[in-house]
Image (cartoon, rainbow over all chains, first blue to last red):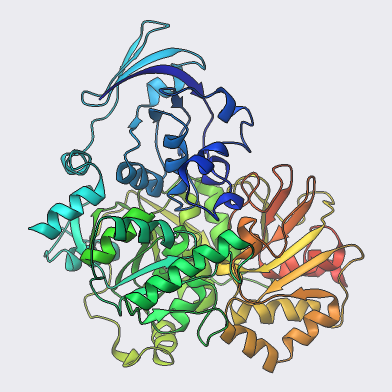
Length: 164
Length: 426
């Protein structure tokens, strides 16, 4: 998959409570969750985000709760991909399972600036900062993870298994 | 090659003799957990994908504890969805509000004897790592993972590396498991154990109560760990005997870390050197020893949760509150972690002590821990809480502040009106 978009940048340890505060977890409606995404960290997020934008953040992105509502809210707000040096492990699983592309790349996460236009190729792991002209290479997914993504997420993968 | 406890459990459940860090495995599951926030999306996925019947109705535990007793109409509908699914699938371990054995999920699963050493457990709740205290591998997952595992009884894991945490010595007065885990998180940071296990061992383990071990494993996630796990000893067996059928034989003979098991690092903690610790906003790693900071006035204290809602915690709190009064203008909220804890606290006269001191005593619920209900914070308010997270907006307004602490510090702070230890009460 190839994405091109503008960068919205955040720091380290962006937790699931700021991605989607628990007070909105009395619903799993995607549009409603998306409308409150990031509001305690960046109140302007839902008004400034454009479809295809890319979040670039510091380490341990998505730490905290197991709420799948977090990647769902991010994806629902139109974010195409999240790039960070590392992700909290439950958030990592949840992103794969719900089809939010995430990429681990410390160099890109530290050098790319807010507002830069970047291009991301999730198949090769290549990240290009069009604004600065620099390119980066993110770690590729393990084969098994690619299989899950290839089956359109964990649900598709599980259905294949149940049908065997 | 030697394996850690976690690696042995995962290998067994993947039908393999051994497994190594980084390996991707498919593991069978002994228990699956969901709550009223994470289960409804899992049910949506399960039904939308026509997954049919759950793989084993006795191995799924559903607990409406987060926004229950229902705090608003939407929450009521989420609980209703879960209840109807539990009925339709004839789920054995569905816990209705108020029913015997009900309470906060991570308090009741061990309490009801559903966790055994050597088990492989997932829960759609990040604090599922609590059950490592009983020598089980247990970890948090999302709703999609829960949905698929409800259908198949298995899930995938990447076999984790491990950090060896060697505990030596004995904890002193007013120091608890909470301080042990806050100290560790402060030392290694909120991602210090990312993707790894925390494997506890050492001479200091024997003196730690099961309540302390449950608290320690509960917060393993707060330094990014996949799971935390304690070796099984006499105290574990004693705990199991009272709760699990055949409990005295519940520990498998293979369940120990090999002498040549490999660890990414070893951390030694001298328990006797620990002092009560407070984690300042807005990260659990932002730790300070009590007595090393100035007066921080607070508006609210919360005692309870899956971290510190057990009977031992209620007893510790009551010792501090006995014969004393909560400071003027302070709200102190005590939430026993389960119906059993509630009843036992009632029998022992602890609830009377709380009420006489001026505390709110609530039904068991996660409630305020995640800013749900029963103690949400207003703009600018500060709260000392025995819960597990102090992120921005965790308990309410984004400009409110949560200070994490153990039970004694929380109770003492409620009386003092500022963050302090029972030593200051005179």
